Length: 246
Image (cartoon, rainbow, N blue to C red; front, side, top):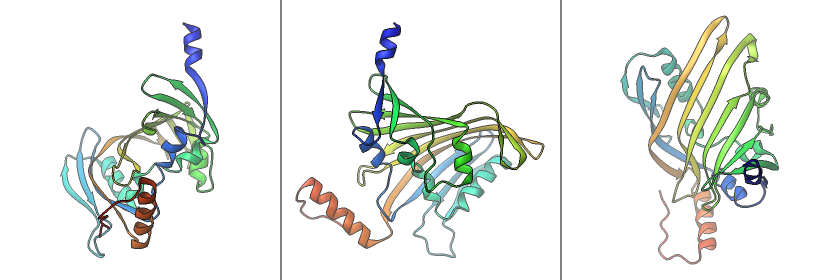
């Protein structure tokens, strides 16, 4: 039995297929944006939000279309997300390829491989990212046949001090990935966050779930869209009647 367990574990390079291909799919083409609808709940309240970056300001692009129940924590999540410069950026894994480093350990679970990694700071990381990398372990599940990532999880090693004098007792962040058939990008279709701790002597408990129910990818730059279509067509062979989305 111990031999079988050891035989199932192996090292894999992030610079070679199938992991290289899967990671490349988490990096969207330049200027690719998304309009989407998301459902958020923490068990006490429910919020449905629609975001569309194509709406001309000052009309709201981030709109709560349905709200049931009362929850200050969930409203804080909705507000913070909506205040992002590009809320659709939450749907793309953040520098996952750079975070893994060059070689990671994998376990063959049959249809999927489970990959364990420690976050490696990248040039895009800020102080919070670098701080978090010291206290979190990451796991991702890879479909080696389809060369796609299907799930990513981050867990804290144990309780740790947070910036500003706070303390995190436990931290878990999980998200599910799906691949868009038109653009080939792997996007986050659902995620779960569970955090317990203390900030400024006040207990914090943030636990919520998000599910993307509708998404529409588009290019904000016609030049980048044309470049993407030319590259895709050259890889797939001649295509008659290609339609450029407006």
